[in-house]
Length: 298
Image (tube, rainbow, N blue to C red; front, side):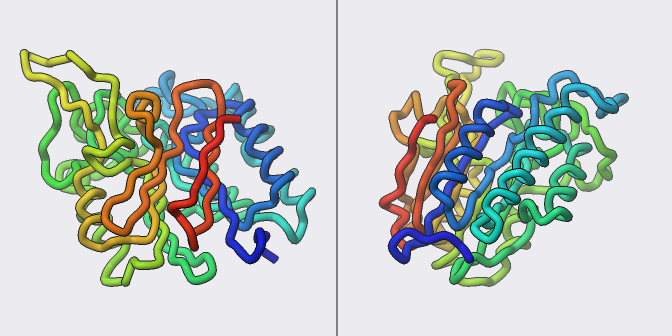
């Protein structure tokens, strides 16, 4: 049975844990204590992929495999054993810092019934359709496994196109050159009414309090950098289709810079869980009252 509080659907949302054992332990302890009905993990979940290269995408063993076995898969497995029938529904997407060669980790967790891998998939949580998407628009970073052009082949100043950088799995050139977030999202949600839907999307919508980056005063070839790094495609989807609720991560410093971790776009509430301190930012929400969501640092 799914956990509820006074008939409400108690849900947790976290993002950008980046392989921190402390953040995962804080999450596990709070799940065990409060027993939510559902937990949403919004990407950038594994240790940083900075030491990866296209020629050697993943090493056998080592810190990465140790984290996966003992903290990620192991932690959720222990939690499921402890909670038994009170174990929550868990929805997981990757983020741009999660190497795609590690996608089997997410699929293995689904195989073990620890979570549901939601990237480019639809699930159902009570009356709420759940859609997941992990890709982000072009960034300055070299790892491009989960990057797409946004609405066109435009690359912002200072950023690297999806065709450059490196990938930990082979991708067809046509996909690299033509795939966009806009088209992916159109295929994902189709013609469905999103009025009661929850969208778990790693990138935040463009020009909101959730996508404000610390780029003040910076320029490339005398061109000032855009302070907002979110997705125009995601913003347009929210404006045009008006989902109930969207959940985002990716831009760690946005809440500190703007003083806000949520924003309303029309009837849609957009919540952010990225954070730029060692603490875990935990968002608690009930889909029946998304405006009543709270956020705590643990």
